Length: 239
Length: 266
Image (cartoon, rainbow over all chains, first blue to last red):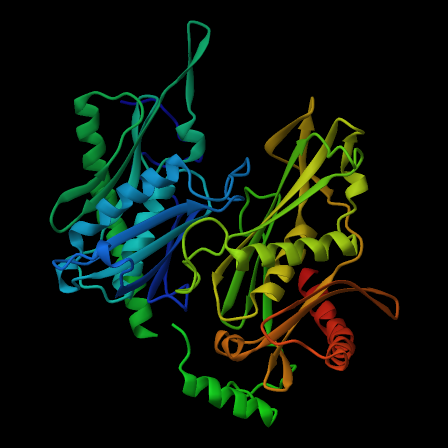
């Protein structure tokens, strides 16, 4: 049995409070907010719309472009506005996390732009962003096979836990009088119906068995998340 | 999505008769709402909604060397990012002229009104002063972003507190209960000229029908009103008479806006 205790008292498989709301940016074709505790993302979708310049157009399918960034005041030390290496990479992996469920061949030569902004960050922001973007795409009426759900699983100390916070991400243990990092962050995006992963990243150190355990927990958690996403979509349908 | 010529014509015709598409009077603002504390990581933050327009603003404080020509003054840096999340008209990339102009108008309004007492942001003269970072992000553009941004910034500054400072290093995440040194709250109002009339708080469609705009930042001292910043923009030149008439209206209307802001900040 693992001995690690979560600082906020959560069970290992328990997420923070999840909130999901569709239709938060009126001007956009589709939009949504998604939060894990105080990690909050909003996403807006524009398109399918005409793609410029023309040489980027693909006669076989629509181009999907995702942009992820954080507000400068979403983190403790101000983040300089504008793209960074980190945000560029997250934008890229977000695009491949979402594109497998989209029927992009329905809109040749067009583009769908997805903009994700992090309002407040306490780890797991790329996952909150993917969850918000997935809802925003559905809200925009883009044909899709299913919703994408994402969560950050961590190996913190000796435990595999769901939806890690910044404090957990920075978890250290004392060994031989020295403090060493004892946290592994494993963000993943799950297509629950297809039972596939469209995003998997890892920073830290785990065994294969631990990774398997993490993915199992990720799938279990995303099943719950997708239900919350569906509820949020139903709510906007009823309005 | 540029509005169709027909819509533009309709807007112009209605405004000529003193009417607007949404039934408001020419100087009638949409109701606005201020929400404080939208990010706990910020030293101060706020969201403002004016109709469907939504802007968030946040304050981060840092320390650094003062500028050579003002060794005892804190620094103020205002940034506007027009993320394409907020409108199909915005594009990714470095800030364009619209974002830069907005940031500079808000910056000058804060600076010239003396809202933040920069003299009180000195830690060690000539060596270390506080820098106030103001970041503005429109979330949904349905017009009047300049005024909405100014209100969001004022609200965020109003609730901002200093973080702890230990051995000249900011302890992020450890907030004190010490508020920023604030004095005269500036009220920023932008008037848009459509046809021969001026209107306040335009929607995007009305902004597109406008040929000129003028922004004014004002403060109050008892019954006196002072103008601290002005910006005329747009293709059409304005007559002096038009400008003075608009400013006279601004001074009257600003009082109402000031009261509304104060009521919501309590």
